[in-house]
Length: 453
Image 1 (spheres, rainbow, N blue to C red):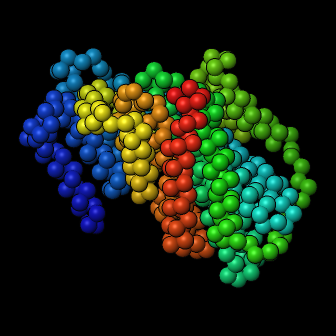
Image 2 (image 1 turned 90 degrees about the vertical axis):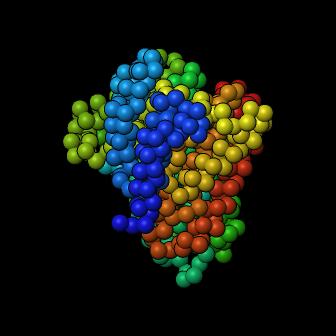
Image 3 (image 1 turned 180 degrees about the vertical axis):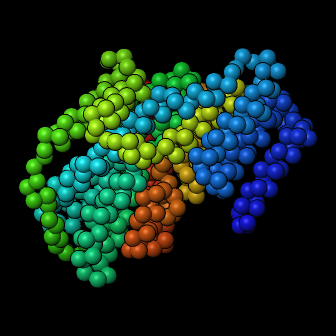
C-alpha cells in the first residue's frame, strides 16, 4: 500500500476511535450526533483528499454512514428528520441543472458544432498572433460556460496543436497558446451555474438558507469578473510569452454550411439557455427547464443510450454526496459548532479573505468540487454575510490553477508535452493570485453595489 494511502487509512481509523471513545465530545463539548457527524466529516475529507477510492464512491459512503450511523442518533436527540433528507440531494434541481448541461455538451460535441464554431472564429484572426490568442481564450472560456471544461480543453488542443507545431522552434508563443486553453477554460467556468460544480454547490446551499440566486443573477454577478480576468490573462500571456512578429496561417471551416439538423440542435441549445435565464419570468426552476433538452435529445434520437451512459455521472454523484454531507452537518448542529471557532469580533472581510485563500490553496492540490463540498457548508452558516462568503469561496475554488493536477484542463495541457510543470506553476500562480485579489476587492465591491448577495 502506498504511503499516502496508509496515512489516509490511519486518519480514518483515528476518527472512528475518537468517536467510539467520545474523545471529540470531551475535547469540544459536542453532542453524540455532532460527534458522529465530525467523524464522518473527517472520514469523507480524508477520502476526497487522498482519493483512496474514486471520488464518486465517497458519495455513497456518505449516504451509508449518515443513514446507519448518524440518523439514529439525530432521531434519539429528538430532531425530526428522515433518510429521505440525505437521499434527496442526489436528484435535486442542481443535479438536474448539471445533467441538462451535460446533455447539451454531449449533443454539441457529437455533431461537432463546437468545433465548427471554434474553426469559424479562429479562421478570422487574419494571421495575427494577438488575435489568435484572444480568439483561443474567448472560445475556450465561452464553451466552458456551457460544456465540460475537460471536453473543451481536449477539443481546443486538437484544433490548436497543428498550429503550435508549425511555429518556429523555441518560439515562446507556443507556451502562450498552450497555457491559454486550460486557464481560459478554468476561468470561463465561473460565468454560469453549470460552468463548474462549485457554482452549483454554492447556489444549492444558499437556496436552502433562503437566499435564491437565479441563473441570470449568477451570470450578472460573475460575468464582469470573468471578462476582466480573461482580458488580463490575454495581456499577461502576450507579455510573458511574446509572439515576436510571427505570422500564423490557419485554415477556417472552408465554407461549411449547417444542416437542418444542426439548426434544430442550435435551437434546442438557445431555448434551454433562454429558459434558464428567464426562470423568474416563467416560474419553472432551472432543474425543470433542464428536462426539456434531456427529453428532446433522447426522445428524438439526437442522442442514444450509449450517449446517456457516457454522461459524467461521477460528477453528478460527487455533487450529490457533497450536498448530502451538508445536510448531515446542519441536521446534527455541527456547522453551528464549527462557526463558533471563528472569533465573532473578526472583520467580515478578513473572514472572507481567509476562507477564499484556504479554498484556493486546497483546490490547488485536490478537486475543486471536493473543496467546495467541505468549505461551503461552513461558509453558508456564517452570519451576517453568508452569501458573500459562499460566493467568494465558490469563485476561489475554481480559480486555483497553479499545478498540472489542479484541474483536468491543466492536466491535458501538461500532457501535450509543450509546457513544463515549472512553466505552469509560474503562470498559474500569477493567474490564481490575480483572480483571488480581484475577487476580494473589485468583485466584492461590485456585488455589494448590485445588492443581490
